[in-house]
Image 1 (cartoon, helix red, strand yellow):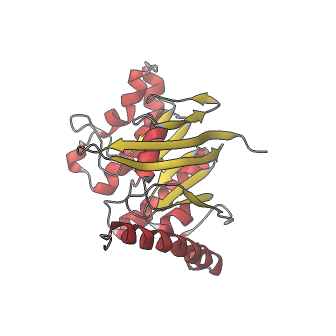
Image 2 (tube, helix red, strand yellow; image 1 turned 60 degrees about the vertical axis):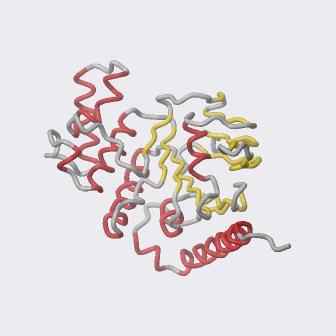
Length: 267
């Protein structure tokens, strides 16, 4: 039986607005990610999926419940969790190789080992020859490849990605999905990935969690029994299209609820 790497246990998150109104963003969420598993989270806009990822990352504290990584509660950000955001979060004053090496230098990894690790990931993300470029000289897709390489270079226990390809054009996004999937298949890293793109969630994920409209809860857990390695051609198969149809239906139900909740109530 596979080991549960990450356990999200009865997590609730409440916010208080400037008008002193309480908003429940997440309510009693329980989920898990097994070792070397790629789990994706989808849901209607505003359902709290990014908030949940921030709680796992230690960037937000839950109002109730807890998060366990390798059986230990996590409350603060740590090197055991690598994070990649939608926005390009590279250090503009550092070169590509310096960005990738940043966390390794903080951990005081020996210089020769840093050079080997950086070289390995530059090769894996297809950026050999761009070692000494600064972020301003890179395209959006290249910046995200550096961000992924930087996160993976630290060998985190789990990689957390919050809509990392959301700002990219469709073709670049598709290539980045293939690159990430290839990296995960090679490294066997554990991944929790938030996206609003249903095709992306199914193509990448071993498991897809569909969330409800606010307050966000887990509506359904869907196992993606599509074998690895995966190629983009699977998106045209009957199995993939059936899975997509199911997820679309679930999210549509929640989107309708969200719209109804936002309408003013008549007297």
